[in-house]
Every structure is written in structure tokens, then in C-alpha cells.
Image (cartoon, rainbow, N blue to C red; front, top):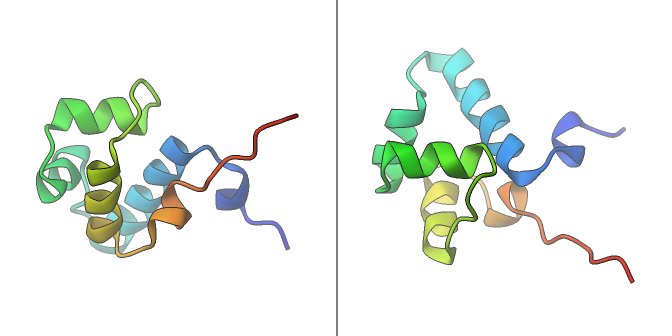
Length: 81
């Protein structure tokens, strides 16, 4: 069965993960996630809204914050031939 998160763009995967965590305990704001990942809230907003591409280090930090693999948040995209 196809899941919504399987077809969403990486930035939207961040939105979904954050919304799931927020629903569970209410505290997962963009600012909280950004601070936990050691990046500015503005930078996190830009990543989540696909205005900026995260660095390898930011990908590592965000995967740690959410407790999932980088591949789950930032899957490698296939390039059309």
C-alpha cells in the first residue's frame, strides 16, 4: 500500500514528521526543531519550505532530531534519462 510520505517531496516529509510529533506531544514547532538541530529557525523554515537545500551536516542533525534515517527524510531522487 502506498503511503502519503512515500510520494511527498523531502521538505514536505519534514512537515509530516513535525506534524506527527506535534500531534503526539504538542511541542514540535519549527523553532524547537531548528534549535534541537542546531540551525536557525529561519534556515529550518527555508529547508522545510523547499527554499533551500540542506547541507549533509544539517541532514544528519535533522535525522537525529526526528529519530529516523536520512533516507526517510531525504531519499535519493532518480534522475530521468
